[in-house]
Length: 116
Image (cartoon, rainbow, N blue to C red; front, side):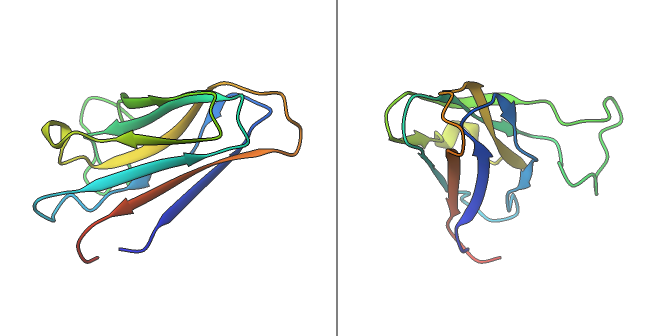
């Protein structure tokens, strides 16, 4: 798969839209890198429910988020997804502390092995 980019402003907290992972590939292998100018922090969230709503969750109207790992105030960070957490259905960027840099951005780069 080609890299998937998710970008949020570094001056505000918030979450990105969910991105769908290919859960039909085995083994599912995902890598995440968070690129920023530093100062912000947050998590990469994952879900086991289909964020595209093709397979609707009968108990909730939105996917349940679980933190796969934190990224900190350094300029660039890796977030590893242990194989014990896979397969996942989707992921998103969650900024929990903003740096206050107006015009700055935080980018999550996700790469999944396999085809699709």
